[in-house]
Image 1 (cartoon, one colour):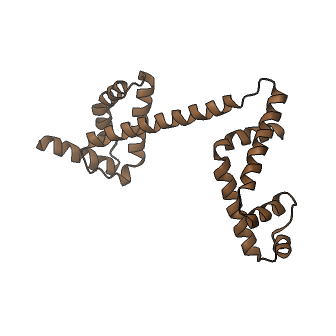
Image 2: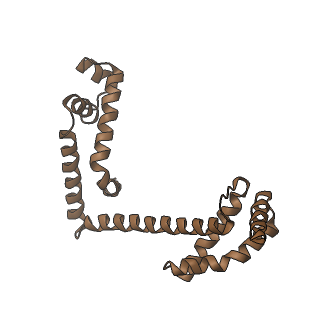
Image 3: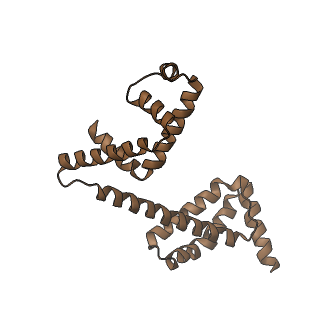
Length: 193
């Protein structure tokens, strides 16, 4: 037990000092076991090696501020597990995004693009219609009529700060209502321009 604690302390203190020899020992002691751990979690050999290498790179980069409250072994395994979890989340987000793109993918490019544009315009109009009256008026005067904040303030008899607050709330309202379609909006508007 004392040998394990001493080795643990040696690894942590050596890393914090930037001792490359200690880092090499740590790498040699844990590289293969961490790769096997990734393989047990369903990763391929190449992905496992990449994850473990990334973990060691992060350890080296953060060595000055390294705070290990457990054993170095537990710390490394936790880092690998967190990386695996983050990678799976990222893959899930990518899969969801691709599903969205495929759902709006046109069979005929011109017809599909027009359909997607119309759908986005309809969704945006619904979001605008759902705003409180004054907020909607400020939004429409700004976006549809192209009026400046001072012109809107004068026309509505309110302060410029109130116009800014209404417009900020309106844009947040639009983001909330169109959040699931923002990637599609972006792609459609890229194709339009």
